[in-house]
Length: 95
Image 1 (cartoon, rainbow, N blue to C red):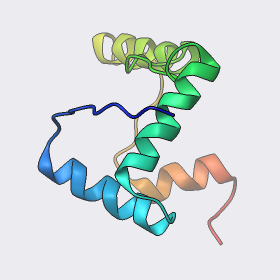
Image 2: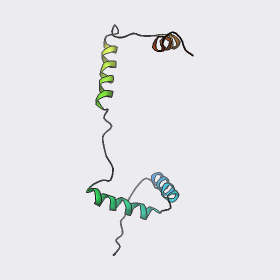
Image 3: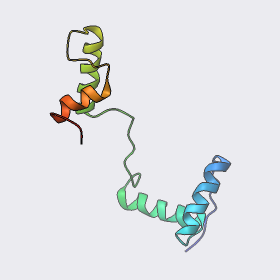
Image 4: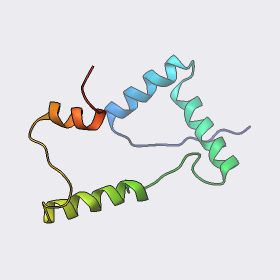
């Protein structure tokens, strides 16, 4: 195998953190990067999912419900006492 150098710029703190992790796994940074490259070839792309921080449909529905409740306080029930809320949620009392 013929070697080729790769220069990568990253935050110094990130580099130190990953070096610690890889060291605990018994490998150096070069080995870890080579594993990443090989996995990229196997997967024909990044070897992990890359997504935007977008809520799933259930979470989005909850956000919409909270927004509606803020716009119309008559929707839903409000509490000023956590113990009272828990009693109602759990039944006749808290154990």
